[in-house]
Length: 530
Image (tube, rainbow, N blue to C red; front, side, top):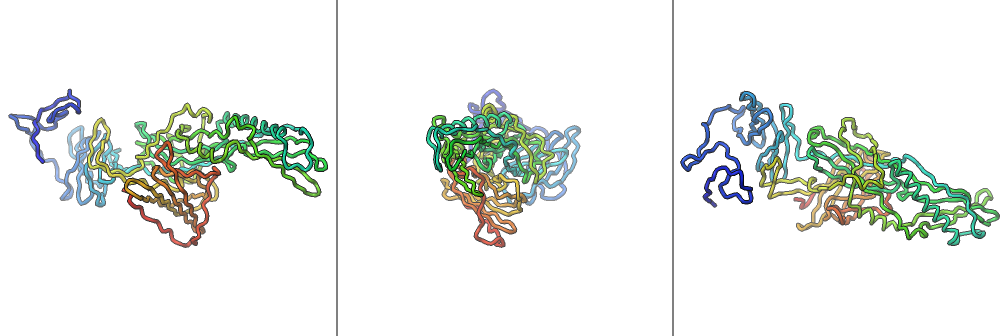
């Protein structure tokens, strides 16, 4: 199709949506003379490329001059530099990027960054200190896991108590006596919680994740949220008090304690390489959700389930009053965690030069957990995890604009991100297979890789960043053992994510696979993922 457009020259006053066909915001090397477009100046011979069949495909204007980019046999070269200060030509002929049969649709640039746009992916090169650094499609996802570290164990003292009447060989207490221990636990809960929060520590499970913050303040790679909790997730988790006993007649209880652990957050570096991206990635930010409310005020009287345990040792009989927390059903607590839609920033790492793989570090939290709501909120953008190509692209206002996109589904987060342990590390190979139902039908994506520091303690919360996912299978192989687990995912109500949360809120231990450890790891292929 051909159409005739009248060349109107430059018109800088009309916005693009009201400009007429033929209006130009800028004209380069053309002039309208006698109704004809004529080039300004005359062609000039500059240089001959080092090798034949090197075709000029792009001129990258940088701080030191014009960089001539050429292509030959599926390879891009930095051919020559025309220096800004004197116009001298400096031949380079350095290899930039092997295309490996990728179809390059266009080349763009923003500042010192050269952008190669292909059908299914976009690649970046950064010009720095006289040479181009190949950045690739995106940074490698930092493999960072989290685990709790017990800092304090606080106790609330329960005073001696005399029952309303004596109990012979008791198995239960009357309501008026039970209320005393209910009140004790209710008071203990708030006092122990306040002590922990004053120290900026946690007592209940929390969700934690991280994201990379770029030089312009935008964020990419919001990691999968994981749940961190103590071995007994709900704190204080139990009360055990010895009863006063005389010839099997119990008249009251001795002093006792209600105990709660305070924990800080630590993170473990499995794999980390942002060296080439340190001019673009400004910081790594950590975000947490608040502790869930584990009771309702009107359920105070049903706070504990009491049992009396009778033991006999060396002809001595003793009775223990035990109470297990049941302020809220665990299914209701699980629901509350899954409904957490906001994550608040608690720490920023701007200098990671001292980080070492296989080492753990403490998150220096300076915020009370009950005041998190005043901190910056994470806005996850899962599209930054996808591989994206574009048939249309242009630069406007120093931003890359792309259209007619072709995207490839994210294969999934590395296994190490779901670790919440820090003991008995193993070197393993693994794959995670995630199944999705989309408008294109059934899809399957597969992450596979190796981990030098695998702990068979996975987060109670496992997720994939797409609400269309419905199942995840994890297979892990070490030298001595194979582990396997299958988890049904449910779409999140507040984020484009699908989750599995174990009802116990405790770390998941993968079961041993029925196959022997010597069986090779048969990694499945992704299906319908573009």
